[in-house]
Length: 258
View (cartoon, rainbow, N blue to C red):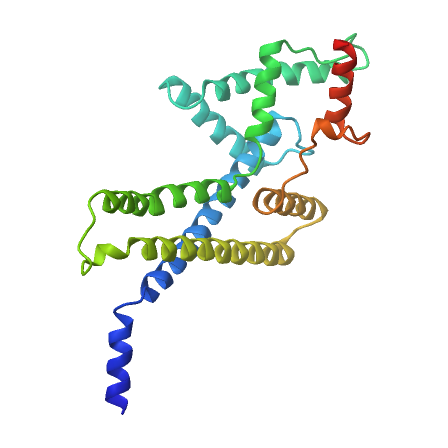
């Protein structure tokens, strides 16, 4: 009886995709964990540089100055070899002007009343603010996974619809393979992101050094929640609700046209 049951299970296992599903889930979880660790390191290194550029830094320290100098060196090096974004180097050059004008603004003996920037400098400043946002591994992994892996299976499915394989061929079950891969990768990504989120919250609670660290942690968590799971309501101008800014602008434009 044991031999018969074992034979039935072995024969049945040849026809399922359980091994593929488990390997995809484990691989997706590992990819998320590794990418989150790398993103955490990159965010913490660039945090000091962006805080200095955008003048968000409350106090100077040797560590923040070190990371700023290292990042600024690589920005200049990339600009020298014509690599990377030219805007990054322009923002670094703009930092000197911002610091000078800010010092003059807070100087009671100086006549400056505001920080003046032209249109190009404002565009560079907006670009620096956007670049200072934390790395979103969700927005990086999701398109890559679902374009590269299931995309190749969809191409195989399209090819088989033009040149149908034999019924006994293993390539005849491409749709089932596509469903298994898509579902298992989605589960792996969700499990991986929840593991990293829980682990990050736990480590931050254990090793946070004060109020500033706690505030930074809460901001990062809120940002990742917004990117992963939530989307703000997109107001429809046709609703004409008073609380809708877009509806108000739509009404103003309509009155102007009339």
